Structure formats: structure tokens, C-alpha cells
Image (cartoon, rainbow, N blue to C red; front, side, top):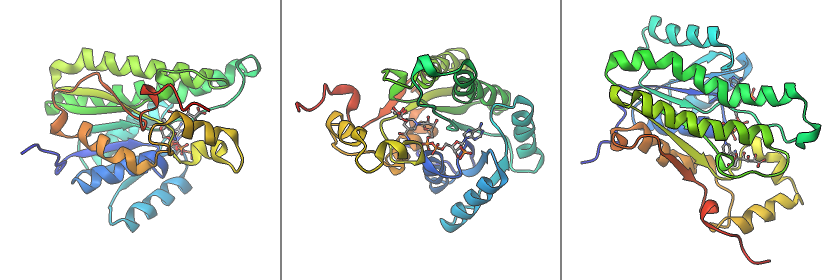
Length: 259
Ligand code: NAP
Ligand code: GCO
């Protein structure tokens, strides 16, 4: 039987107090993993701990800005020193977006998006890989995007970061596959979370646009990502490496509904 169990595994999911990260962490916990998560503020971490507890999940939460390499290294060491163990599964989920026309975006704003969405996945992966090598293997899942493949107005920094994250995923797969580390990406389509709330506001034209571009004719939900994440976090995907699994209701396959 294919093994989807994560019993005995330790999973770090970044930025997982709510949204996609919370859904993915919940799925990994339901399969038996011990969940470690971080967020940028103690309020958010507490909010996440309470939400996990409500689902019967005893998660471990830490305040940590994923762009801060020293803090990330401290987090990874703390998880081991506190007896939780060495991280087996990393989900690089934390991310931001700034929707600004490129000619109006400052270099600082561009850099901030690159820092969180591309530099930070490098920093966190670099922090956990040595432990994975010692343990004889591991799983890294980078949360990419439709914008790893497509562009659109106002998301230049985000698309550049997520395109880079696709290639970082492939490079980690290439460089560490021989250590039994599989690194893959998940490319969510348009998912109903706080990040896309502005696009789903009453009367916003983007809502009907996305429905017309999605064969499934609906926005995705964080729960749609649970199964794909469990697959990539489990032994079921031990020969899948460097793959970006798009969970988009068919957007990338579809020219769009005739108006
Ligand atoms: P979200 O609702 O904005 O949640 C993102 C989480 O990351 C929040 O908890 C956020 O904390 C945290 N975070 C942001 N910057 C951080 C930092 N520097 N250090 C630590 N945590 C940080 O986003 P989401 O919709 O769940 O998306 C999660 C991931 O999926 C992101 O990488 C996003 O790019 C990607 N994605 C989303 C969609 C979609 O349609 N929603 C589609 C494709 C890909 P704060 O609350 O403090 O910001
Ligand atoms: C946007 C959206 C998208 C989604 C997602 C799509 O403004 O176009 O926020 O970028 O977040 O990345 O896969």
C-alpha cells in the first residue's frame, strides 16, 4: 500500500497561523506529523496556536521573520534543543504580495517582496538541509504560484519572486536529490484567503475574470491544497523531484471562456 503516513515526522510550515499554510499544516498533522510553525508576530502565533488547538492539533509556534537568517537558524536549533527533533519536512509558505504598477513601485518595495518570497525560502531551506542530510533525507515544498508561469499587471515583484522560486525548487532538487531530499513546488491557482481578499471584494471585476479563466469555475479554497501537500510531503512522492504541482482548477490549461 502507498505510504501517505507522516507518523514520527516533524514538519515546519512557515507563515502558517492561517490561510494556505494553516490548511497545509493541518493536513500534515492529520497524517501524523508534528507541526512547527512560525509567524511574524506573537499575536499571530497565539492566534495560530488557538486555531490548531481547536482542531485538536498540538502545534509548536514560534515568532520568526523568515527574512532574518539569524532568527531562522535560531528557530531550527530551538526546535531541536527543545526536544521536538530535527525537521523532516519544510513547507516554505510565508509570502507577501504588493499590487503596484511597476513604474510606480519603489525599488525598496520590489526588494521587500523578493526578500520574503524568494530570499526567505532560500534561507529556511539552507537552515534545514544539513539536518535532513544527517537524517538520511527530507522533503521541501515551496509554495509557488500561477505567477511562476504567467504575468499580469501590478505584480512584477511577486511574479519575479515566484518565477525564481520555481527555479530555486528545481535547483535544490538537482543539488540534493542524491541525499534523498525531494524538493517540489505547489502552484496554487486563485485561492480564497486574506491575500486575495481585495480581488474578491464585492463588485471587483477580478472575481468574474477568474471564474471565466478557471475551468472549475470557482475560486480555490485552502482545503484544495491539503491532498497535494500531503502527497509531496509523504513517501508516496519519493521519486518526484523538481516538480511544480499546479493546483489551479485548470487555469494553466485553459484559454478562458468566450465572453
Ligand atoms: P496570506 O493569507 O497573506 O498569509 C501569508 C502568511 O505568511 C501570513 O501568516 C503572514 O503573516 C506570513 N508572513 C508574511 N511575511 C512573513 C515573514 N516575513 N515572516 C514570517 N511570516 C510571514 O497568504 P496565503 O494566501 O495564505 O498564501 C500563502 C502562500 O501561498 C504565499 O506564499 C502566497 O504567495 C502563496 N499563494 C497564494 C495564492 C492565493 O491565491 N491565496 C495563490 C498562489 C500562491 P502576516 O499576517 O503578518 O502577513
Ligand atoms: C494576484 C493574486 C495571485 C495569487 C496567486 C495566483 O494578484 O494575481 O494575488 O498572485 O496570489 O499567486 O497563483
